[in-house]
Length: 392
Image (spheres, rainbow, N blue to C red):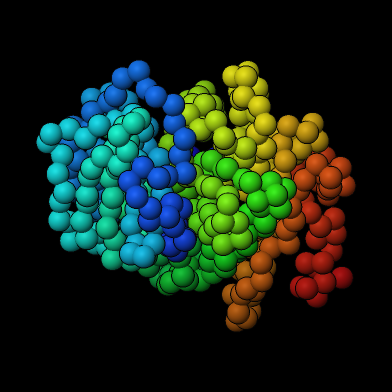
């Protein structure tokens, strides 16, 4: 699967987007049936969830949900105890669905039932031993839910062993794994960095909404490192704003850059008319959304998220977007070169976060960018690295 345009989270040497999703606070309180943060209009007809199958997979626990018509999943992570919740709006549970004991990996069981009757919402709950990463893949009438505790190092063990045997060292950015074998450094744009970005955006949303944020968070789950941003964002909003609401929405990787994504966003907002914030865990996810919601007659929406690309920066300048985190690819590349140099000098890698900032309409005009408008952030970063490397 190709990475998003611009390869904004691709490492210099090897990509290994490994997973390790910490549990956020409950996105929905454990309230009586039907009391959720979702606001839906009445459907003209309902889909039936016909079957829920546990698939045979060696690397993860995979659950297949089959419907009579197109299924549109909405995911939530709950704690106390840890659960992954997948809701299917406008869907009724069929006669053949049942609760199942799984006891595979970190998944204990799968429960299925009618969460809300009017309009109908079928809820699938995965009871977990501990909080886990997940991916959700909608395929029309079928949805695959994939739960892992991280792509294990064994997935790359043969390649990394071969690299080590030949004296080849590997580092990675935007990686949730710990260093192992030839993969000696995964500290650049690591989960702690992503979590910090999540908190930064959450603080802005809470303050700017004056405690009245109703957020739809769109998650590109095919790239698990991004989930660390989502997890921290949701947790911070819930911690700092008891009157704010956040709903998460899984976005299939195949929708990136297509009308399917903008259709998903406008559909979600139409079903949830109190929504006033749209958050995306990758800038490229948002491209085209501001125009689509305007064309759909939807207003009062603020837009932002993780890692501004050049169209997002243009949107901030135009006043159609509101807040993005900044991500400097040139500095990431220099950090990876620095990491390699330290390895061959027998020095430990740096562990500091990348220099960053929130980009808003108020400061977008003063950004340090290159000639193409890409974010750089620090104008003299080359000079600073040369000083660090003791080069004149």
